[in-house]
Length: 298
Image (cartoon, rainbow, N blue to C red; front, side):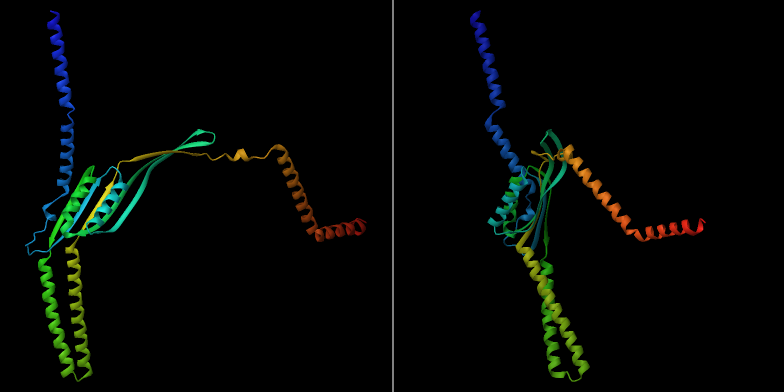
């Protein structure tokens, strides 16, 4: 009977150990972590970021992503390093902390506990080679703790480039014809001026087409990624020196009495000087009183 009880107890312990190991299997935990990383990378990646080598289309690719990170400052440095590593550059970054609440609690006569609640965020704009866009986005995905949204666009500008090239050719031909007309047939000053104005307009149109094509080619070669990073609200506490009350600097009674005597003497001097300034009126008053006593009273 005792042997059966021991066997039953041993079996129960083995069953509990089996379920415990299955519940806390490290391999399972690592698999879930890998799955999370893969999901984050897939969530912000897109076929819009992949360029076909043999394709005739020319795409302007842009990405707009907002997400939460563990630490905005560290993630910012990581993104900047990644951008530089793959031949890109940062065109805009605005890293700032916003104070949500601040409380000061006096904990001793000369010490105060300052509690500050703040959030950190950063808006970044980077440009990377078009062929590296998908790679850079997947590396940035490793910084994501929570994805708010992602928007990836690929605008085909092949026809726009072709239109500008044809317009440039037409403008060049017209420009040469106008120049020839000015050299051979321009006699009257009015005709020459009109031809010169037409030539200037043709040159301006030609230049605008060239500049627009250069701008489009630059946007094709380098994709633009706009990132909005933020983190959870952070609480910072520090002990600072308390400001002393003005009563702590109040002078003692003896100094106050001396100051009062000085102030009284200054007031007396002021009154005496004021009366001296009134001497003409006092003189007239005494004279009038003397005349009244001598003549009018009789």
